Amino acid sequence: RNVFNYVDDFCEGFAVVGLNGKYNFINQEGRLLSDKWFNSVYNFREGFARVELNGKWNYIDQEGSFLSGQWFDYVDDFSEGFARVELNDKQNCINQEGRLLSDQWFDYVYSFRESFARVNLNGKWNFINQEGRFLSDQWFDYVGSFSKGFAVVELNGKNNFINQEGSFLSSQWFDYVGSFSEGFSRVNLIGKWNFINQEGSFLSGQWFDYVDDFSHGFAEVELNGKTYKLDT
Image (spheres, rainbow, N blue to C red):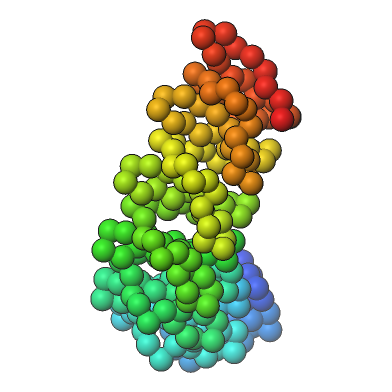
């Protein structure tokens, strides 16, 4: 019977155990997952656990096999079937078969959200899908994560939305765009405010001094010092 210095809770059928400053996993029958003991380990997520040995990182599966022949400088947990890996100050994603997402290594990669990951290269931003293709031919000054099928993109100090086909929501670029709430986003242009829907149409022919997000079908708007309730 094994006696450990440390035992964590079970996660995905395995528990982290520690002995003499090294770590491993046991299954629910009490068997060790690996012949190797690691300097650091994390709990399983999507069938893989992060493990560190001699300053390098990899993933171990629930059979005790390493995901990649390459050991990395750092790795993140899997999310939507991919995980961020770092090597020589550059980042990429790896899938659960151990294949890298892209031949291109990036300065920064975010986790996938709604099937797209934000990537940064030489100070510019784009999205990459799970087949390794860029969403847009245009690289942006900044991009936000996808939410409800749209993401905010910024270029030359102006903002717009991009959809998951790579099309912009509006031909008009704005000084500010918000998040969609009840099907509408706040937009600001030259100090005035309106709402835009997910088809790219403005809600009102009137532009306001300020608007709040929609809640329960109504939004407060301000015009000439007076406050009104606007519905959809």
